[in-house]
Image 1 (cartoon, rainbow, N blue to C red):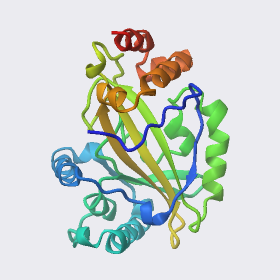
Image 2 (image 1 turned 120 degrees about the vertical axis):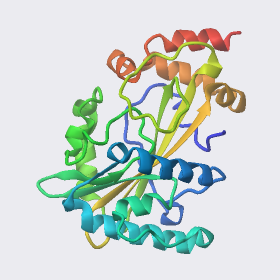
Image 3 (image 1 turned 180 degrees about the horizontal axis):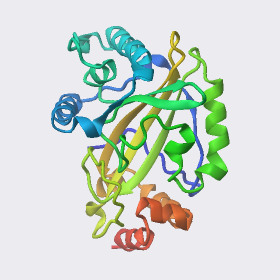
Length: 269
């Protein structure tokens, strides 16, 4: 599989929100893996509901509005994919069954809190531990977040409006190609370049017009590192630099310790 985004900065490691304006006609992405990924979602929703679904009553109204927005977007931009939803199913789950994206709904009370989510393709984090949590609590395990990103992230959420939506990219390097990775175990990848996998999340943020809840979508792409290097001549060099320059705490958190030297050796053969 190829990835339509290569978000490794040629300038080296950077920890930033990296927000870009979002055209809502491009809110949801559809590709030829749709049937396969929706089938996997359906299986996970049946076999692992406690892992991939988390809801609280505070998120129910916003989830219903989200489902309406997903249906409206499909009818307008992908009419061939619009279909009826299952009666009686929580709306955040019903919406997730229609699209390749995972969905998180944040509602403002004393602060912004995650009140509903359907995340079938987690990247080594636990949804159950995040439900009801504030933005700061959700991101607390991430090194440097509190010092560098907590204030701008909270400020951004407070200033977001329905008429201005945004998207960003996040990436990591893992030792497993599976989309569904709920375990928090982080091991440094071993082996050759084809034993490593580049994982990209295209994330969008938009505020719903009626409930004013914020929807965070996550569209996940995974490709063999070898494929990425072959398809993008400068990618390997930029990736090694980013891994080299990442702070030690981030390397340990991500499971990247020693990966730069391994990758450098793989690129030289």
